[in-house]
Figure 1: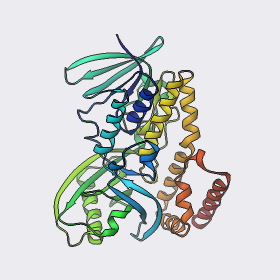
Figure 2: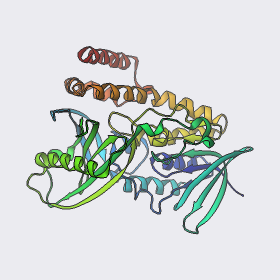
Figure 3: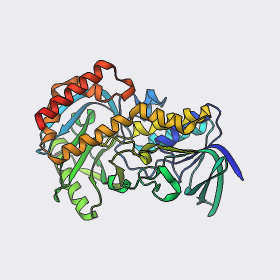
Figure 4: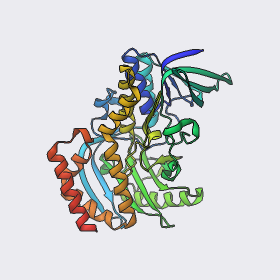
Length: 394
């Protein structure tokens, strides 16, 4: 039977980072990616937090726009601005493709058209069965450690995954639709330095998040609604939102082309258990997504780094990975879920939060940091800001 030290399922930011950093440290690594071209079917606004390329040693050429400005819109369409970073934008085709290429260059084996099917533990290894879509054959590979990083649609809820399964996982799924809007002339200059996030209610009363992220040759305009929604209603909501963006940012421009993309995101709490014996879970498959804005690329890549570090050290891999995740960002993500549910119960609260952020520039800066990066004074500052917000909205 074929064997490897480290088997990764999924070649997004989590899987590719894990593959690259494990291979760099001499760990025999194989990645199974279901698509024929890495990143080609990833649907994402692809906003990157400040310093992302530097943090993960990626080429600066991936960046489309440097976005120094974050514009938040409340339920009444009132705009609040704050400045940070700057952040960056890219596309998942370029980002995932570049990360996979770097992983391969550093020694990882990337197998495309390899569809993960089943996993079981047998003795001192994990046995993974996958479908080789090119040859139309089932194959099995044994690994010391498996890292599951197949995104929000990863199916980990049956009994085979034991403690990793999360009974209420589907309740956290978000249905999204995005347009890539290509124009015959540039939009307003402010569009290319701004990440826009809009928080309001859909026609059926459900809360939604909408966005506009600028790219080199198009604008990414999309929205997400918690749970299932029929396609016609989702398209109608996006059409209404796109018209709002058009009136503000490109009223005189003609649309030459629109590419439509739909997928599932995740906006609920992270999995309670992300490592069990020889199996680790990372990225969106583990629920490592900021529920307030849908950001998950940084968390995915960082979970890949932590997985690679645990595997390279070889002993107590599951315990080491779980502990690192907890120290890095588990608490932050849990707090963001709680905040989002609090805001959704009374949409008028968004205005109070955004006004507070706009009036307190330091708040956005501190919020970007992970738990382990904040100083005692920064933690105290956040608690004071949280108490101030609660007092104004309770």
